Image 1 (cartoon, rainbow, N blue to C red):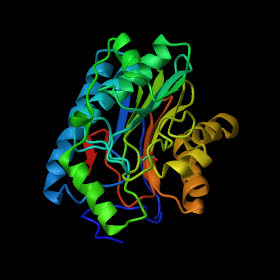
Image 2 (cartoon, protein in one colour):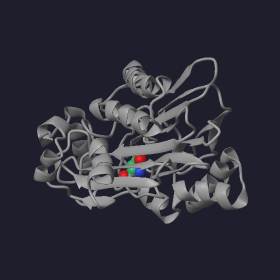
Image 3 (cartoon, rainbow, N blue to C red):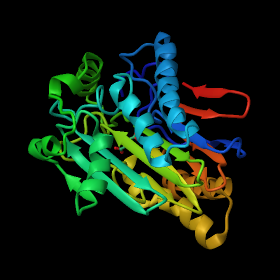
Length: 320
Ligand code: ASP
């Protein structure tokens, strides 16, 4: 194994679950994550403030939508868009690179109000993958598109970008180090948001470059509805980050909602049980942000770290 940087995680063994639960405060709720992978070695600890600034900008974007009575769906997309634009996070610009050095994006969104969802995988052209996932939901007859073409992105009037825009020096250096060290354990990260709006609807959005040094074409849980992303009005919205394969096998985001739906579990109990049974017991690490229909927020991870932003009633909590 090569040297891990401060806060950086490879596929670390899961630890005891860290969980924050915030009872409903106000008439809307929002929570974000910036990945359970930690910052990469190429970005030193002094970048903490930059990570905090990125999370707080994304929070402000989502909160602006919700505080003027906007929809949860608009809020989660606005927040994730900000994190995609920020090169520090593994989504959009600054996405982790595949073995071949390319940025391939996976993203999904689900609207609890309508039960509709949209997802994309191995996307290379949309500047903001989350907006493309939303466009699939709203503008096509489909739910999930793999390798969406440049002409489709353009025909929907979405902004496009070249690989040069997505691929940052820090990610190139990270890939070179991983390849040079012959690391088998790839590094991860992802961004996501959940919200409950003033009308009581919930939504979730997740966007990622996947695992550093993943094979071209590898797809993780982030665009898989029920695994990395799920939202159902009356129950909850969940956005995940971590070892995608385990999240898919454990159908993690839906497992949480199903515990609430069929067992009448509260959100915190559902999250605790799902992490214990579907992740920790499977030796997989990661985390999630979630919001219940009543506005309660639960942020939890069994990974050593998870970047997150949520309001605890007295102020914005930024975990970096
Ligand atoms: N879940 C993402 C994936 O497997 C990576 C991450 O969240 O860290 O692609």
